[in-house]
Image 1 (cartoon, rainbow, N blue to C red):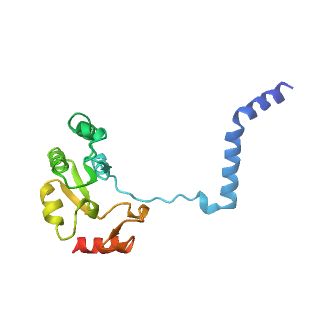
Image 2 (cartoon, helix red, strand yellow):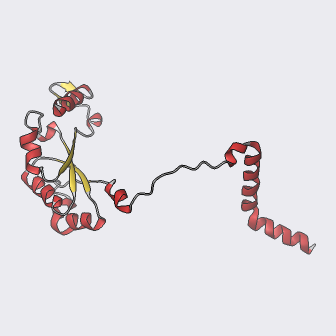
Image 3 (spheres, rainbow, N blue to C red):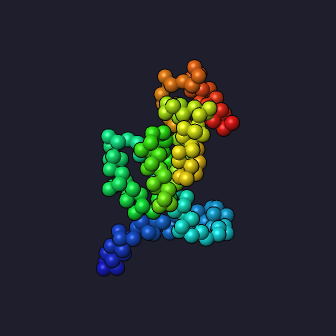
Length: 171
């Protein structure tokens, strides 16, 4: 009776582990190829390379939000996080100043170009790129036009209008 009681207690404690072992055994028996391990040689990369693969979306020109506290919150927190890349868009002088300031501490930008900001492919270099040339890493087209069906570019709605904008921007 004591042995049965002890086995019963053991089974209650270890039933999930036992079930897992039995399940794995059945899997191996029914699917022998599942038991084979495939080794993939992946070169080790540095932690720095991983951090360099990450970017943070910001809204540096949203001065009616926490972004108004650029000097005392936003900039120090980005620096503390070790962020090296941000993504943002706009074209006002304070926005440009902030992007260039971040570049001095190693944080560079992907700029979102959007006709709603007065950025036209004919003026993109002078209006949006030249003022932040030291900080810029990449340029991308407009964001989230698919959720705003009333938007258009040169009278063309999404997606045709944005495709035209992107092609002109590329040129």
